[in-house]
Image 1 (cartoon, rainbow over the protein chains, first blue to last red):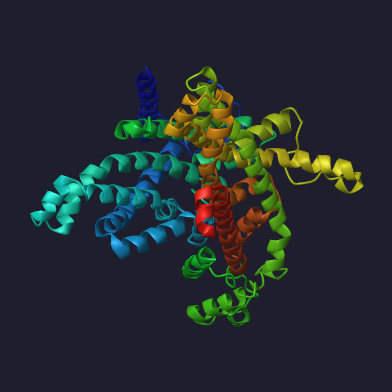
Image 2 (image 1 turned 90 degrees about the vertical axis):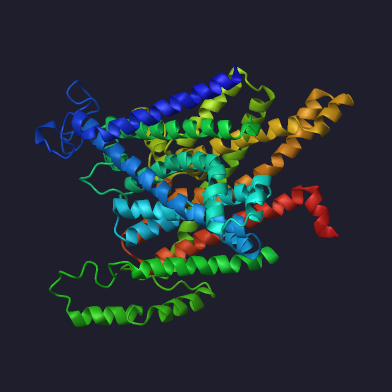
Length: 271
Length: 322
């Protein structure tokens, strides 16, 4: 019964993930309006049948902007996680495979970065590099690889003691092939979990940056920068605040549920 | 002491990273805002650069900055008032510290009982409800929650103020009214800062408590006839509380980083808002000063967590004495 409910939650998460991804991909075809088209006569209209989520201060349709915002959020999430995966995999693999001094050094460096207020660093870097979607992806990726590195290291260390790895070692399999062929595939489960959860984290950070005006720049839509307008018009236009945040919440929730579900599958002892 | 020494390379690393990033980035403070101004001649810009030391090679600028950093001199802000960075930070720091300390207290007061109840009544409706809360707490963008609460409690119901620390007539209030006013202004920011930590901590507490309850020594205690209340609230709770200390230390960077968003949202005159303004105006000395202070605060938080862990765990305490 318990197993059933857990997998049920994961299913909900998976469905959310797929639906949001589809909406993002199909945005140009399903969006009822041009997300950047300004309609001076329709400024700040509350939600209605014409404009499901209302319009903003320039009369742009919020629902259409949110659909295109989903593209931004997911793109940032995936690319940032991709970057962090590459860094984390390489560093973790070196530390876990080589062991000894290089392991100690790398893990110490990882711990150091881990206890640094990364949001400060991200903000400073973004502001000084000019805010753009590419810079956001890179900076988020560069500041979120620590979890993956630790995971991969731990997996490699434990795999290194297993018979099939020892056997491969004694057959003289070279290091790179060893990692690629024998160690990495067996460490993929936890890495996948942390990647899925990482997308959720990156989406949250991106929305926070855009909310501060240091992320995706208007007129390009993003969930975070619609919320900035919501804050500026807090007294009169609640819909500018409500819907984009709900989109963030649902998306992040979806990835979290999926990630947690996958974790339970890959690591039954956590039950 | 060994841990204190271990922090020095980290601090150095942070200063190098932040210094390098900012100086390699395009846009110079002496040029920004002046490039299209016909009244500012090229010579003036050169003079400005020389005045701020921007004409020297990078490593020299860094060394200069670092050597003064050692005596807590962060230089002067680039902003028009030109005040020392340290003075600007110290006047803003208390607000940020208070909000974060209150947020941590709120997290502890609420999350520990929540986690314990959830664990003791595992799979009850209460437990399910709390699990839902935890998942939403993880996924909710704190600034959005803040916005919604501002709209609901501030704009629609008019119960709580939505920005700043004081009402406009703060000066005329009696002492007690001032405290009440301050408290009302702090409720939303503290709650919004705490929400993520609340979710994480209660979940952690729940799984920690579940682990402990299943441990052999608890079974032994039960077999020996120790009452269930005693088992739960004295034996198990104590042991489940230990990891909380570590988690608390780990949550400090998030809280400090989050203060930028919370303070910007509620227009609170704290260090986070100062940082935001400094970033927007490319005030290098101020940005670097706050980055360093933020890192120091985080390290202090971790140090306190480590020390209290050592103090709370008899095994480590013993080793320290011998």
